[in-house]
Image 1 (cartoon, rainbow, N blue to C red):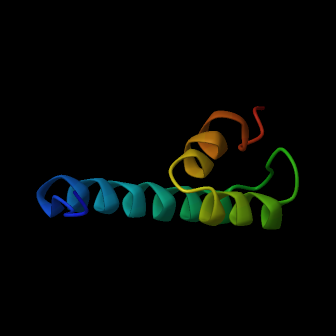
Image 2 (cartoon, rainbow, N blue to C red):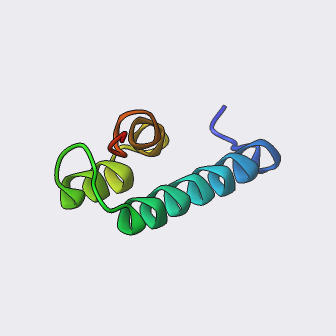
Amino acid sequence: MGEINWAIVTPLLILQAILAIAALVNCLKQEETTGPKWMWCIIIVCISIFGPILYFIIGPKKE
């Protein structure tokens, strides 16, 4: 116990980073969001994989 299987963890970390970067770029380019942009940036960065997913579901303001 205690040994990390990096073959499994590394792709997940890369996927999480790509998702967070995509969400941040989208958030900053978005004209209007549901709530302030600074709040969404904090949520995306601080809430691991669920922050970006939350942003893509409810963050961008629907026209």
